[in-house]
Amino acid sequence: MAGHSRPQKVVSRWPTLPNEILLTIVNELADDRKMLLVLLLVSLSFNDFALRHIYREISLCPNFPPYKDDIRLKRLLRGIEANPGLRFVKSFAFKITPCFTYNKDDTDIQRILPLLLNVRHLSIEYSPLEGEDYTILPLIPRSANLTRLILHRHLYRPGDFAQLRERHPGLKSIAVTYAHPLADIAVSPSAFPNLRSLQLPVEDILRIGSLPSLVDLSIYGNGDAAARHIEKAFPALRTLSLYLSPAFTRITSLTSGLPKLEYLSCSMDVSDITPISSSYGHGMFALAGSGLKYLQLNTLDHSPDYDDVRLVFDSVKSMVVLDIVLEMEELRFYRDFAEPSVLAQRNNKAWWQWWEQEQEDVERAVLKYKSSRTLIRGHNL
Image (cartoon, rainbow, N blue to C red):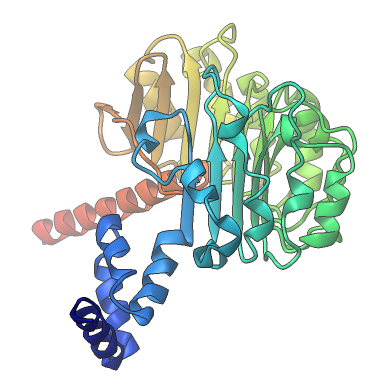
C-alpha cells in the first residue's frame, strides 16, 4: 500500500497548478524530449500538454543517420490504435533516402495515416518496393485540414488527384518529387482556391490553367516551352525555381513578364555557358527592369569573375544577394561587399520552402545596409 501512496499524492497536487503555469513549464522543456517523456508520468494535466509537444511534429527517416535518435516507426506502431498522442500530430514526414536498402517493415506507414485526424503537413518520400502496396492519398482522413503535401512520384496512382481535390480543397502547397509527368493531373482555381505553392514536372505545368493565387512555383525539366505559359497562367509569382532550366537569356526575358518576382533559382545544365560573364551582359540588362532581390545559379563549373558579379548588381538595382552554387561550395555575394563568403551547410527549419531561408537572409542584409547608411550619414553630419 505504501508503494502506491507516494505517486498518488504527486498526481493529486500537480493539477492544482493553473494551466498557464503547466504550459509554461512544458514550453521551456520543448527541446528536451527525455524530460517531456518524464512529464507524461507526473499528472494527467502534464500528460496532455507534453503529448502535444511530443507528437506535434513527427519525422521518420529509417536509414538516415541524423535521425537515429528520433522516434522509430516500429516503436510508433506498437499499440498505435490506442495511442492518444496521434490526435496532436500536425506535421508528419516519412522519408527513405535514395540508394539505401530497406525492407517492407521499414515502410509500413499505412497503419498510421488513417489515424492522423488533424494532420496539416504531410510528406511521404520513398520509392516503394516491387509488389508493395503503396496506397497513400486515399488513407488520409477526411477530417485532416491538409494544407501542405509532399509526395514521391512513385506513390501517386491515377485518380488520386481527383480524390485529393474532393477531400482537401484547402491545400496551399503541393509538391511531387522525383518527377515524371502525372498524366491525369488537374489543378484549377476552383479545385484548389487557396493554392499558393506548386512543384511539378514541366509537362504537367503546361496542362494547368490560370492560377492567380500561386506565388511560388518549382519546375522540373526543360522549361523552354513553359516560359510563355508561366507568364500567362501565374502572373503573381514571387518565387520561381527552375531545374534543368532553359538558357539564361530566356530566363531573363521571362522575368519581364513577372512583375512581382523577387526570388529566382536556376539550375543550369553543365553544358550551358556560364551565365555570369561579359557575354551575358545583355541578359543581365534584361533583368534591370525586374524587382529581383535574390538570384541563385546552380551547377556552374567555375567561380565567376568579380567584375561580372558586379555587373549583376549594377544591372539589377533591387538585387541584394547573389548565390553561386559550384560543385564543391556555395559562394554568396552581397551588394556592398566585394569579396564573397562561403556558405556553410545549413539546416533549414522543418517545412520551409527553398526561398524562406533566403528571404530571412535578404531581409537581414537590407536592415544591415540601412543601418550602415544611417551611421555614415550621421558621421558626415
